[in-house]
Every structure is written in structure tokens, then in C-alpha cells.
Amino acid sequence: MAIDPAGGPQRDTWGSKTAFVLAAAGSAIGLGNIWGFPTVAAQNGGAAFLVIYLLAVALIGAPVMLAELVVGRHTQRNPVGAFKAIMPGSAWWLVGALGVLTGLMILSFYSVIAGWTLAYILKTATGVFGPDADTGAIFTNLAGDPLQALFWHFLFMVITIAVVVKGVRDGIERWTKVLMPLLFVLLLLLAARAVTLSGGGEGLSFYLNPDFSEVDGRVVLAAVGQAFFSLSLGMGAMITYGSYISKNQDLESSAGWVTGFDTLIAILAGLIIFPTLFHAGLDPNQSGPGMVFVVLTSLLSTIPPAPYGGIVFGTGFFMLLAIAALTSSVSLLEVVTSWGVDEKGWTRKKAAWLIGGAAFVIGIPSALANGAVSWLSAGWPQGPDFLSFMFVVWGQYSLVVGALLISVFVAWVWGVKAAGEEVGADGTGFTTEKLWRFLIRYVCPIAILGVLWTLIEPLF
Ligand code: PHE
Image 1 (tube, helix red, strand yellow):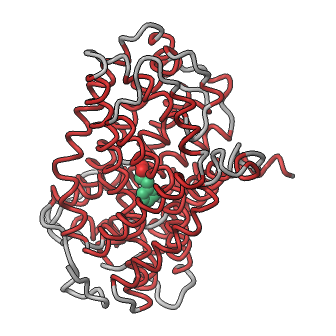
Image 2: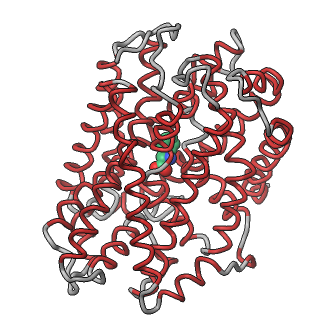
């Protein structure tokens, strides 16, 4: 469906509140929950990280989610246009521009990981993961082969572009309705299998028994960054999605549902990964971008009746994961595309192909960074490989900075009063207004600044 470039009254809107909640949940739920959360939790000590993560979601994530949605619905614009509409003539549009750039960069490496999930659909369906399978070697053979890595990255990007070209309602809404609940059920079943594995208890205790002695600024930043990444915050995705919400939908409860769903899925993913990781005798400290793939597939051969249990569950799981990734990558591309359409006057089709094409090219080094090209695969300042480096810079730091600026903008520049009126405009009131005001004005900016400071301080 076409979008009115002026963002006027004909702007495409979601069919219903449930459709919007599902689509926003579709953006939030993705690789960030099932790939990102366990990976970052493993690298940052497990249970202590989980506690800090949950605090970050409740105290910072949820209020910023509402702030972004409210800016979007109020202005009915892409992130750049939204800041321009509220503060014309100021430099605040640069925050939107940073978001658009961040969206492009995240999409570039996101598509690489999502490409692996496509490849894994084929592998699981053909019964590659029997009891004797070397799941580590299977991952290395895929990600380390430049042709395969690039092919799956390319394929996933083309699918993302095709969905975005079709427009918001036709493209995005349809997928999430049935498939997200299905993903949830499958995760529950996999978690039930994982926690009953031998050695699983050790994994559970790593995941659920916090030891705060190793927590430092880095761990807190990783938790806050991961919360933003997982909730699709800090770069304007929720501003863009909010811009398609009609005036009579309840923003407050929408924000709550999306935040809740997303967090539940991440917690469940941890319940699958950590018991399996310890069962398989792997070391959480060594986890890189491939960890989740290696660990998940070693769970498959333990599902009875062999080999069919593993084939059915594995294929179903990777299909759903690919679709969850697609509803997220679509939202990333949608942010940049809506900027191209609104601000540059491109047609939707042109914007999606140009920008998706650029994201593919920018993603090439990430695709080659897991064994294919050795200097990209090791020695980067922020991690063992270029993909992890991109994830930390754009998926964590940039989102944290973006969310800081968005919360300052809404709380202090646009003002909590005007924002609160927009939240209440749907006639359902704004029950948590006092709490939200407090969180967005003080807790969010101070907590985020504090975390950034602990990283910068040692430099002085
Ligand atoms: N939240 C998505 C995920 O968890 C990733 C994403 C980040 C999407 C930022 C949009 C914006 O997979």
C-alpha cells in the first residue's frame, strides 16, 4: 500500500491495535532475543547480567519505548521528519539522522546472521544434525565459506527488500499474527527439553544464580545496549512504527505488551541455550557469533524419536527464527526507507532497493568475518571479529547514545506535558503518567549517562 509522502491524513495505518502490537513485537522479537541475548549474557557472566538486563528493560527500555511511539504517532513522520516537525529549525533532526544511519548499519550485519538461519533450515531439514554431528564444524564450514556466507546474506536481504516494497500493512502485518505465537510455543517445548538434559542444572545455575562480583561498567553497558537492541529502541524504529498507529489506539498498553513479550522470549532463549551449552561441555566465555547455532543444533539430536524429532523441531525452529528475523530486518529497512520516501521524495520501491542494496554491500565484511577472511575474523578492537565489532558499535553504543538523546528530547525539549497529552489522546487515559515522567526525565538520562561515563572515565 502506498504511503503519502507528506505524511498527511492518508498515511497508511495499522488495521487494529492487536495488529500494531504484533507488528511492533515482530520488530522487537528477532535475532536480538534468540541470538543476541544468550551471546551477550554468556560473555558477561550469565545470571548477574540477566538481573541487570531486567532492570534496564523495566526502568529504561519501557519508558523509552513509550517515548518513541508517542513521537511517531504525534508527528506521523519518519525519525528525521519527526524531530523537524516538533522542533523546526533546530539541530534535533540529527538525532533522527543518526537513527537512520544506525538502522542501515545494523541491517548490514543482521542480514548476515539471518542468512545463517536460512541455511540452517536446509541443514536441519536434510537431517544433518544426527547424534555424531560435529555442530561446531558445521557452523565453521558455512560461515567460513565466502560463497555460502555471501549467498545467504544476499538472499535474506532480497527477501527483506521485497517485503518492504509491498508496504506496511500488506507486508509486515500478515506475518506476525500467527507466527509469533507459534514461535513462543516452540521455544517453550525446546526449553522443556533443554532443562532436563544431563548437566543442564549447571547451565541453569550459571543463568539464574547471580554473582555480582564481576559486574563492572562494561557489563552494565552491555545489558542496557542489549535491552535497546532487543526492543528495537534508540534508532527510531518505534518512531516509524508509531507513525502508523491511528489516534484511537492505546499507546501505553501497546508499549507494555511489546516490552513484555520481547523480554519473555529472551528469557526463554536463555533457558534453552545455557543448559544445552553446559550439557555439550562448551565454555560460555568463548562464545562468539556462532555460539547459538552450535549450541542449538547440538540440542536437536537429543529430541526423540531420533532422528525425526530433531528434524521436525530443528526445521520448524529455524523457519520461525528466520521469519522472526525477517519481521525485524523489515523494520530496520522500513526506517531508512521511510526516510528516503518522506525526505528524499524517492518512490518506495526505489528507496527500498537502493538502501537494501547499500546494506548488502556494507554487510560484506561482516559476512566474511567468521572464518572466510582471516584479518576480518580476528583482532578487531571491540571483539574477536568484524561482525561482533559492528554489533557493539552500532547495535549497542549507537543505540544507547540515540536513546539518551531521544529521552532528553521528549522529556526536556518537547516536554512531558505535550507528550503525555498525546498518550492520552486515544481517550484511554494515561495511568502511569507520573511514573513515566519520573523515569523519562531523570532515571533514563542519568542512568545512561552514568553507564557511558564509567566507560569514558578510565581514559582520563
Ligand atoms: N529488535 C530486533 C531484534 O531483537 C533488532 C532491531 C534493532 C530491530 C533495532 C530494529 C531496530 O532482533
